[in-house]
Image 1 (cartoon, rainbow, N blue to C red):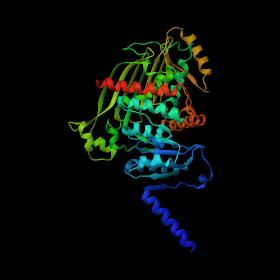
Image 2: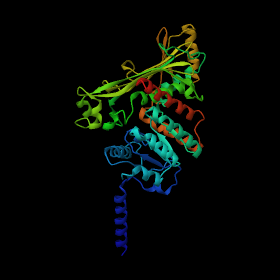
Image 3: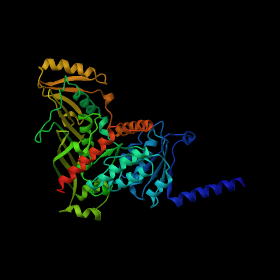
Image 4: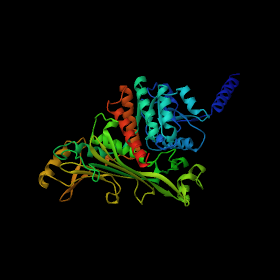
Length: 464
């Protein structure tokens, strides 16, 4: 009799899972259910590998049981495979238990289930505004990959979502990984040292006070595996144009470095000029990063002379509180041998320039230079720089003389954290904000201003 009861129980459970479209990724241990966790993650429609990177590490206050709601298709399957790989890795394996629902009503099911209290969004950006709005309305916290919005028409909805989040006492936050790159942190800290940097210049349209340029690649290896991108990633109506995508990071860094912890508003922004241009992708290249033999029908609108025109590139020049700034992003198909995505940044001060380069000369490693000494003699500036470096929250930093006007800051390997690891750092910071029950007072105005800037640039670039 006992065996019969156990068998019937198993049959009922199995049938229930089939009816709901749920699947279970079993972790290595089931003991986690014995503990009560403050945070339970919900992964919503994961179409980008950034969703998995949030779970590349584990967090003491976060339940290992994660509910995933997604449409049927390869996107969520790749996501689950990445989590499986983290669970199975020999060094510091994770212990995630993914419970997946793939019914056609996956989003409505997520809202009604409320199986967690933090929704992680990283995927097709066309529906992201809707996902954010309805998740916030349901009283759920949201940790969203950039960009939160991809068109000027979505900006009012984002503003409303932030307002509702404040009223409901939940947090809406985007994943700004670049704030955790060590050379960017050092650039920011040194720019606040008047003895070294002086003050940020005003700049001009032709020579902005601050410039940030990012180069990315469609063909990419993440967590040791070639990224297989979904076809929709190449559709600007679903992924968004480059001028509102990667630029989100660059605009954020300009605000974060030049106006630290200051409350900014859209009225502080004056867009001067903006432009966009396509990256041409052949059918062979498209197959190399998607696995598909041909362009799907919804991309035919962007195919000219047999090449897919992906408007992944953009540039803007604007003023923020009177300071001239330039942001540029470019996408290529594949990085040179030994290389990867690159970042260039310059801040012009009244006493020197702070420059980050990441070219072949730096072995594609972000490197901070202090150059173009403008006021002090070289020996005086050297002394000031050494004193300034001693005050930084990093030990073992070294100063190397490059030439008569340039120094290189040598950063020990122990401070070099990969882009993938930055996702864990952002998530840890978000968890601290959740515990406090609020974001810093400058964060929400900053996010609103940031997305006003990127969408205003797109509007100008398209002549709208």
